[in-house]
Image (tube, rainbow, N blue to C red):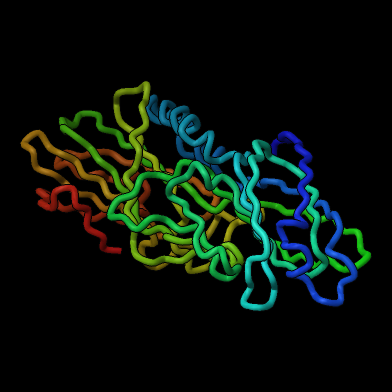
Length: 347
């Protein structure tokens, strides 16, 4: 984690808590100052994944070009830097009612806030980098157990535009006790990419989509929910090498039959055994010289975790199919696919 910039902001919350009306009757005063320190912790495999997949001694010019392009594309996503932070404090009883909420422009990796807090028990949640990400709306935040990061319900979505970070922390503020609290925020979204060799092909167009990812993230429980199967339109990333192309998408993680929470340990956490069936997939639509379209569905049976980048590689063959390099990636081909670009979902 980079050292970042340390900001000290002093906020008086007595008025925001409406005097003493939200605290127990037997408290002798409305509260006192407590320091809460926030830090973004980036646990990711991005550097290792790019190096191992695209920068080996056997890498092609296409792969080296894609490595540089992906780093540029992802540099503002996989970063331990918060622009905006949303801080919420909930009652631990009474249906986890919201007691106070505030928002700050942090513009740092690390920041401290001194809050004037009534003495009681809280469940505290923190969210970072939501303001500039139209694919992540905070919903249900009037109650702690309902607070979510929620994606819009649309047939096709664009990529997330920020790296989302979240945290939750029980806070017990007792009378006469001096306490400092440390809140560590972890990444909640992830990314996929594919590098496709088009050497020798005469295709007219190529579009990539990704599906099989979560729709919602429950902040208090750090759990992902899957309400439908959103489709992401993968971004085409410009390359300096003209022998192929690279596409990428930033989204929530996939289903994970082994563990469905945010990754907070080390890069070893990204090594997970494969599931029996595909957990997420990429769909390639290749337009041939005669105008026909070939659909290739690449199914991946290894989960995509929060904070993880997964790179696939493949080649366009004579009939327009995209053949993956990885033999563990299942592929299904439909020649002369006739569905237009209304992408079917079959996970």
